[in-house]
Picture 1 (cartoon, rainbow, N blue to C red):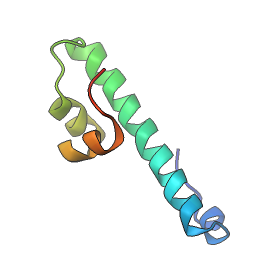
Picture 2: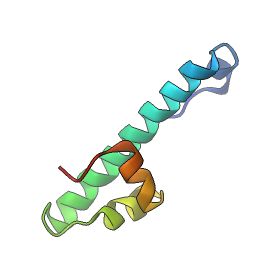
Picture 3: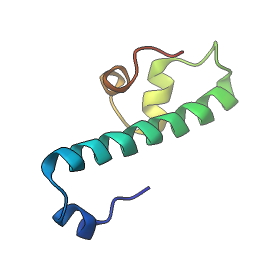
Picture 4: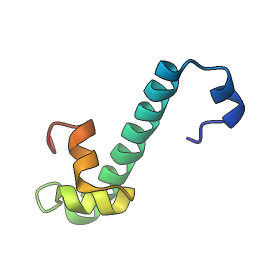
Amino acid sequence: MLIHLIELDFMPAATIREKTSSVRRQHILEAAIRVFAHRGFHRATIRDVAIEAGVADGTIYNVFENKT
């Protein structure tokens, strides 16, 4: 999941943002899967997912509309 720094040197800024956004989204999805497995979908909160992913609550809403 790590972006190689060498790859970034040759990418335009827009492509770097897209790649970073894609990696962030995947990281949050993986955290959500862990939280849902542990707490269950209905008991899990956005905050639980944010804590597991190591991001602010607002970051979740920047990437996803809602929990579903």
